[in-house]
Image (cartoon, rainbow, N blue to C red; front, side):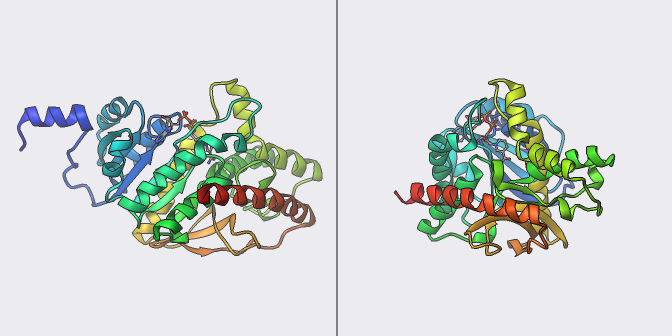
Length: 338
Ligand code: NAI
């Protein structure tokens, strides 16, 4: 047993350093932007995930406090905090999964693209660290605009010679979570029993709920389709406006990100039949990146599933989404290569 003075020091500086006895071996996960509105509840949820054995919390502010706090939870994962750029490499070394919710959120009147100038640089720097310290990690990108930050990450990894499209995933789970909730309300079903594929991207008209493919099979009036499509596409703005300047979705986002990260970890473990929607490198359309259902496994994205039959309304939506997505992808690639 280490001396108590040493345990105390570790607890204060780094958080818990004691693996729970008898805990199953698990995965090493880093959260980059761990002190933020999403980062804090997401870190809490990852500390509760039994598949996580080591949890690294990195941010440019406040990680000692967040780490000390979360480390007191009596769950299995060892928690360590890392503060500021000089500690980025230590935060990333040896990680299996890196989740990135770092960056500024929207305020009322802003689009996700308005965040580009600041968040593009943050994502680039963090991905340079990933390429150097954990090139084989699965990367979950949450920072907006996801439609551009995922292409930026891809370019950074290409330059470093570490790019594997199977391991780079943009997190669009919140769109699916919202769609399941809103469709559940309309149909009078428990939202946990509803599954709505949401494809395209993660901003405005690029968010395409496929209401013709809802599980359990159901039908909607054209009024319901237009209400649901608009509410799902504008769910983020609904929260931004309700928060009135205090940021964007954080709690539902942390839930969605934790759900998606758990699916990635179960895939890494080798579980079968894990299907989630994600914005990834894709050949489903002529665009180089597109969100659709993917099957997750030991290598990350094991299979990109086809879109399935679309109705006329969805085909028109897809047409509109493609134009905006193409421009967001172009902008991301240009930024990374300038
Ligand atoms: P926040 O401002 O509350 O937290 C962001 C955190 O990132 C802060 O703690 C900040 O210190 C940190 N940060 C800034 N620069 C950093 C750097 N270079 N390295 C590490 N950490 C850094 O923002 P919030 O609400 O947590 O949102 C984070 C991002 O997630 C935003 O870009 C937001 O638009 C996006 N988002 C994405 C969603 C999605 O569905 N993919 C949904 C909701 C938000």
